[in-house]
Image (tube, one colour):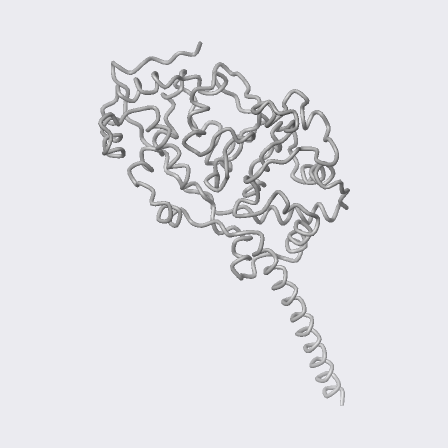
Length: 351
């Protein structure tokens, strides 16, 4: 009799468990369906190369130039200095340190997945990655070089002459500053991070736990997706930082007016491009000021400043857990062996 009772009890428990599991699975599928309406998985580098018909020789030249210190005035600074591929495509300091140890005005955005951004830089002043590459090379607080100097360096090295001729075969004069920045931009388009747990979830896999799913639901329900959606969860549009409530001046310095500094339009004061959130767990400190080191603190600030909401501690923790699922497979880029300088190569200048 005891065995019969126990057997019936086990069957009932199993049925209840299956019922609950079915409800949970239904909720997960509903959440997945909602998410797929707002977000897209990151494609692989191979898919990007094929889809955009990227030139393999330009990619290889761009890889070398990305790590080439001699295109900086001091022969010390590279693109990778501020956009380190070993640390999430950023440099993990408040603002980047450039030529002569000068600090830049804003936090360095990640280069990873930047191909998906509508524009480049916090104020969107570069329309694409090629144009973006022109800026830091010439900025006096960054690489502090000139187009003429860059061309002199590259023309002084036979290997680079050969690589440019191969990558830009239709050009009569292939070694130019424009072609150098074009190659860097083409290489950067391949720096994507696919197969994050969130991508796998979007594709139907059981890749997010209950806490992460709760965070995703909150991220959508609270209104975060008004600024952070699409493939890169941001990087598409400009919004006022302090839409509802101005953040602390340490976080949003009064001296940096954002888009208004570029356009001269007072109505665009404190407007910045919505930060892409892919790999956000790897790229602290946060915001253009680079003063917030905690992802949880950043979430709290954004909820108050942009949405006018004060989140509960468990809500912040859940959203942070979801944001950690946006960390994808980091690009495995081999550090290039660069060609040697020659007697004609301009000497470094640290002044």
